[in-house]
Image 1 (cartoon, rainbow, N blue to C red):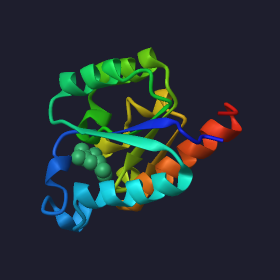
Image 2 (cartoon, rainbow, N blue to C red; image 1 turned 45 degrees about the horizontal axis):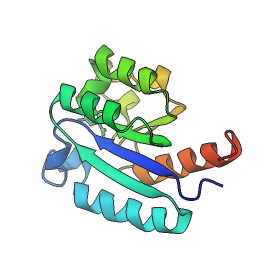
Image 3 (cartoon, rainbow, N blue to C red; image 1 turned 180 degrees about the horizontal axis):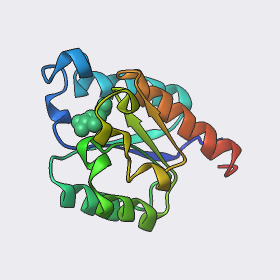
Length: 151
Ligand code: DHK
């Protein structure tokens, strides 16, 4: 059981604008909607969540370092997915199970979005289901924690 475990939910650049930002790609739901969706699920799953969003790469890395005692990570690295070796190294360094999530299907968009520096240091990637990607990511992570790690 993953009960009582602490999960970090991290969002990268421009996701603070979710809801108004290119809604035809990212949908009309806001980051507060994501938060509400995940909090409702966390209540049922018996896990606690800590949310963090930043447009600054170093701030995300510092947050991960500071919170490395957590049990798991759901992360939408946004554009840092395709650029940041530093963020990839941070996730590898803290060594907690991570799931990469994306609102849009990054594999069906521009060529440069098909590459993720982050995916290789994650358990897996969920992409293309709008804000449901976060919920699927959380459920997959909790399942992984209870089944694979016996937590
Ligand atoms: C969000 C972004 O901001 C983009 O830079 C990524 C991702 C895709 C998403 O779909 O959630 O390429």
